[in-house]
Amino acid sequence: MQLTSRESQNYIAVSADLAQEFARTAIERDKKGGTPKYERERLRQSGLLKLIIPKEYGGLGESWSTALTIIQEFAYVDSSIAHLLGYHYLQVITPHLYGTSEQKENYYTWTVENNWFWGNALNPRDNRLVLTYNGENYWLNGIKSFCSGSSDSDMLTVSAFPKGESQPVVIAVPTRSHGVTVNHDWDNIGQRQTDSGSVSFSNVRVKKSEILASEFRSSSFASLRIYISHLVRVNILLGIALGAFEQAKQYTSTNKTSDAYILHSYGKLWTELSAVTSLTNQAADKFEIAWSKGIELQEIEFGEIALAISAASVLVTKVGLEVTSQIFELVGIEATAKQYGFDRYWRNLRTLTLHDPVTYKTREIGKWVLNGK
Image 1 (cartoon, helix red, strand yellow):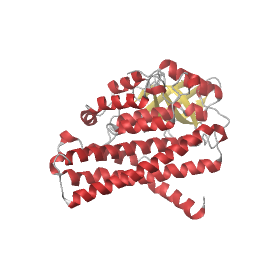
Image 2: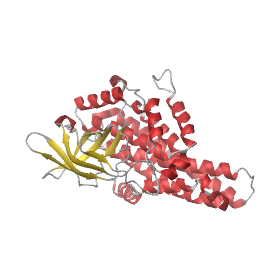
Image 3: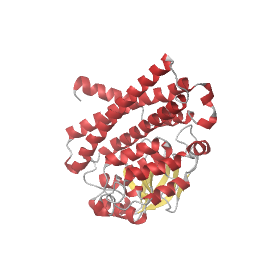
Image 4: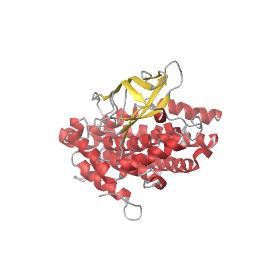
């Protein structure tokens, strides 16, 4: 199914059809790891890559709420695919946040025209990548870790430190540039098909026009990027938890039970999932309003968005870990057989939650609660 316009297609229905298709092979692909080449190609064919690109640049101009719903839809059955698509959206809007008006227009337009799939090499905690200038050209040398979606991507957002400077710059680099090597070294317990390993850069030539250089780089609007990544992750985590709950429920309900412990546990988990779903939707709605304000977004409004997303992140981590762990007590020993793949829910969720430990978010929320900061 190919997306063309809002009037002729239902984007969420398209993603639901794809999710059903991906679900049939999700357990085996999780065991295998590596690049989900076929599934990435299906995403390219679907048109979903241009979902949130504004119509004025040839995109579908859909809302973030729709994009997040679709990410959650995929995470319900295959959180690696949800991760790849969600991080694509995060990278494709990076020139919008960090670039000039010309860069924003160019990268949106080129993404639509070439159907680019974006990956990332932007990990801000990894400072091993250096940008140098020899008076004529810019050059990238070094390595970046946790580069989700890098394999089979067309473009990468890259953060690097200009030699001798303390603040990094963000660069849009074609993945197939000479000197770029995507290292297939992601071998972690979860999110096994996200290609979140490392990327090496050896004398990679960078054009000045590829260095994102907005004068509003320090604005509240540009600062939304980190919270977009958090909100994408919240929806992936919620999708995992909901998928785990549904699969466990289906397994358990094949034999009607009156066991008080099982009934109480399912009721408790359902209630907690309902609460975190509501909180996540509230955060998405607030973010949508903030996004629409663009450069006019005020600092106090940014703070409110940060708080809402952080609260959702804290709760979905707590509830998600509880759900994906407790389902084993509810489905029983027989369901630990590999054919059911119940373990992948916990492995994927646990891996994702460690990207940004919620202890720090809880502390920031506490700072606001007690000190109003």
